[in-house]
Amino acid sequence: MAEQSFQNHTARSPLYLFLLVLNLALVISAIIHVVQEHSRANMLLVPVTFSLLLAPLLTRMYATKNQDRIIRLEETLRLQRLGASADGLTVKQLVGLRFASDGEVVALAARAKAEGLDTKQIKAAVVQWRADEHRV
Image (cartoon, rainbow, N blue to C red; front, side, top):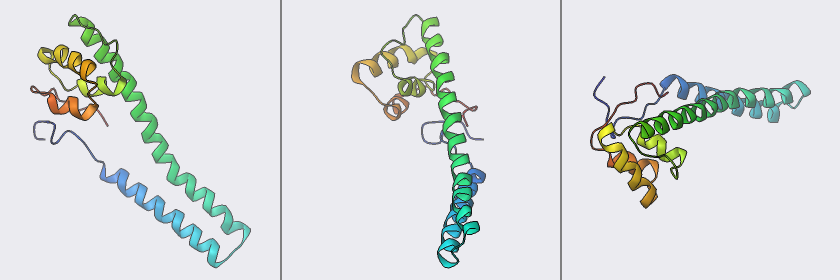
């Protein structure tokens, strides 16, 4: 894999996207089926297929929220170790700071606090990129 940077740090899972498209097609198909042939059994297909669509979305949302909490803890501890404070930084700002090297994270954290930088602005300001290969 190429060295991670601001331009290539996002990852997409083709299998996850395929699953979402497939589940969306199932929901649409179930709705069409109910309209064409209205029966109690066919009506049950709609909520069942809709739950199949929601399951991966909720799973992804929960996993991302959990990762954000872990990153918040890691970055708070890293800033403390470097003699700075994470007070006043949002979780999203801390998520952006995870890519900054130890040499620039303290100054970038202060700037993020002072200027209210969002995640994308923080990541764009990183000079020495610290790759995060474990984020899903």
